Amino acid sequence: MLTTLNTSYTDTRAADLAWALGREPLPALATLDLELTGAKLQLRLLGASHQVLLEEERGLCSETVACIPGSSTPLPLGVAKRVGAWEYEFAARVEMLTPGSFAGRAQELLALVSEHPHGLAGVFPGSPHAFTAMLAQRHDDHVHWRTWHAYPQDGQLVATRTRVGARARNRQHRQEADAA
Image (cartoon, rainbow, N blue to C red):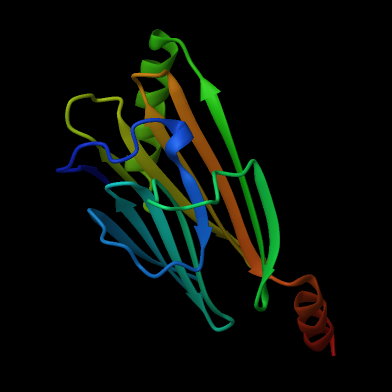
């Protein structure tokens, strides 16, 4: 799904992005509710980037990557944590692109996400290449999502990748129970 976001940039450069787990839902400009084999997922485009809300039988998980006033947690390159009964893995990278490369990459990503049934993309007014895009999938015991935050004025594209799933011990117990 592709939408135009009726707001101006809140986070005007990649360095302004922060990462947080466990935040309450923030006001969203666009949302996409998904059901992925027992997992309820809400992809949320914010005026300040993105938030993902995941609900499963094991509990709730909330990831926010946005310009968060007063946040002391900058966007990390990688995180691996246990969150309740889940294993949470997050990775981020900033791509530096030339203007021509940026335009091509932006068109490619917007086409990929907007045509995918589990994708949500929002374009900011003023530039067809200023966007935030999100794509979710489920593989076995894990829910995965990827996001892209575009900053055409700086030629920066921030890409994140998240994986949330059952802790290894929980998976082993379930596999043993299934085999019995």
